[in-house]
Image (cartoon, rainbow, N blue to C red; front, side, top):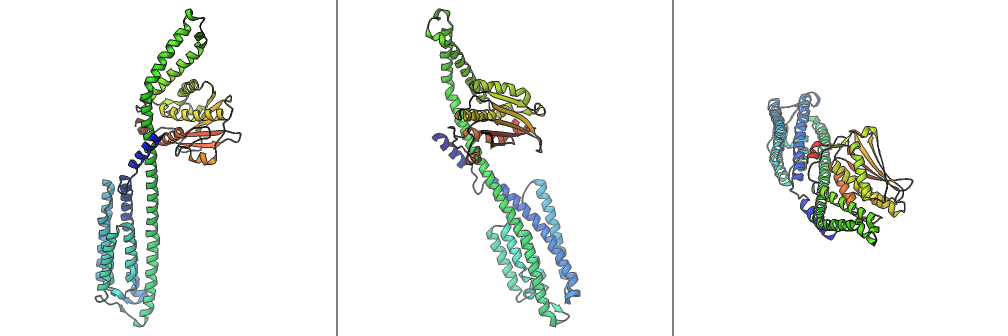
Length: 459
């Protein structure tokens, strides 16, 4: 077990992604594409607001604006946004994502357009001059800090230049300048707050969600690394145990032949003839298990669960002659195809655990129940396999951890089988659950998709 733990830890460390791993790169790439799309739509919203202010400025505020240069700037912004839409379609067709330089270029164009508009509308005296800040907050959310610093220096340079060079605003009534300035500051605050609330806060939420997905992916890789380590250990054990089993089979065969020899009918060995038959059966079963392990990487044909279940139950009963098993299969589930190898592996682990739990509880004479039905409330349809025992049950804390990591159980197990079964179930698109029975014991539920994934099966 120490060797297994070290191998699992080593494999987990090698599988855990670093800051520059492909999983993280894929997540950040999707974020950059989402950021570009949001910048695109935000630019249309800002252009609409600017056009509305341009139309209403003279009527409501008595401002005389230079329409020609402003309309030229608006038109250039619209053309640039159409190019951005074309660029988004290119990324969608090629399956690519925008880089940091492309995002910085987008923000640089927006800051330049804002500076040009402010230049023709009062420069630093324009109450909307602080609109630089939401743009820089946006930049801080989507590009690296070095580029944010560069954009901040560029905005500072533009702002500083407009302290001295700008086209003054012309008011029809200069006495209302203070009122109009306060109203403009209020509008600027509202626009900035809406921009930050709807974009930056939403983007931060998406980034947090992406980090959670990356953490889940790392945990999944860690579990798979542990399973691969356990599989490697199992393959090594299977290779090493083959020779001793063959030796035992030869010895058992010779002893059975001696016990069956009529010439030795008076010797004590003849009394052990039934036991020797049982030993040979168990050794044949062990060799069959090793053969299945060697062929585990080969794709097995799907079988209807109703055709597969009786042979599986007989094989399990042969391994546990002291236990009893009762099977029940619903009519609607009998024709559902399953993968016999992996499904049998998981059910064997669940039934073995259930049998040990009943033995520990002193109820080994009671039968285990294995039922297979269809889950009526699930979409897509699920095959529900239940293993019900009358054993000792399990504490809630153990039940929550079982299958997620190897843990010691109340009847001496280490939880490795349940851990492997949970991993196989997830690979097949299903899951394992454990519940307490009010009458005592445990219900283990294996839920599998009613239509197995052909690609997963082929793998």
